[in-house]
Image (cartoon, rainbow, N blue to C red; front, top):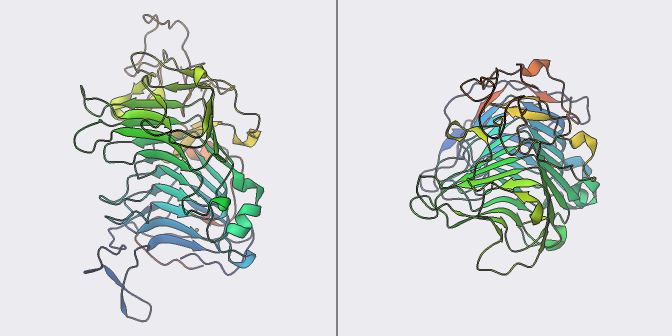
Length: 442
């Protein structure tokens, strides 16, 4: 648990733990996993045991950590008054996976509530087998999720209302605006029906976010059959809880396909049954539906005439089989985007892109951010819609190979990053207690 004795930007924390196997999760009521406490007593883990638990933390950066093997992986708690609220938390370059409890949906890879919460350059992998929790669940004001690789969960992103910090969070002007951009979001057989949930979930509707989710320059990949093992009849991109929540979706790639050749793909739906959506230019797989089939839609959707697709369901990924989701030189997603909403400040422009894994690089050759999805590219000189007139490498791009990127140390810090209170280079397994951390070359 991180429970600083002091507050403010001067706070600095350092954490360095080995990464090993862990049973820091309850397991079962009948035969729970146990630990020995500071008094030498044997105790059972709580369901919500967390590898890294932040309480009343301020100006804290968690960087380069591996967090696995717990009920909740990374947890940030806040209370309803200044002395017990957490604020300005940055999580970057971490690998968080394998958390949650089988048969339960209350524990997650990430579960946070703070005033100011930024996630960037992280790899959020799948939860523990059988766990029903979300990948990233957040109840914060000032939530920013950018340049991450996120796989699986009941929701990939569950962005809902503040609970313990309601009085402070709802008074923070950032509470009603959330930024999600530059991410890779992957959904496979056995994962949840609803990819992105925004608004609230506890039934106290007046405290829901009631604002705008700015969702841009993301690459969403769904591969699931409509029938068979691990299948889903439908997959729904946005679940907005009420008509007071709005999603602004621009310059994304929304790809859907069957998981196995020849099978019928899961139904691909943009909205659930409520909420307001403003779509601008986005690439979407053919056969999409505006709202959930079989149920009435009470919200509103605008801009679907600007959605673009290709009959062959080919956005132009380099190699979908290996999840190389960068754009090939002939991709229809190159130079196809539009401007961001005027409500998006310049500090939240998509100027970087994710590098596999847990790194980033400048978004190459896309000064106007006109390429769709999380990865920008360059339409090479001499390449036409039919045929190639210039020799390309084995991946279809002149002189640029996957993984050959500048080291993160040479890149500038992202805008808005919190510099103080850093947890550096840690690898965390289990519920340990921590006390007072292109253009491409041609």
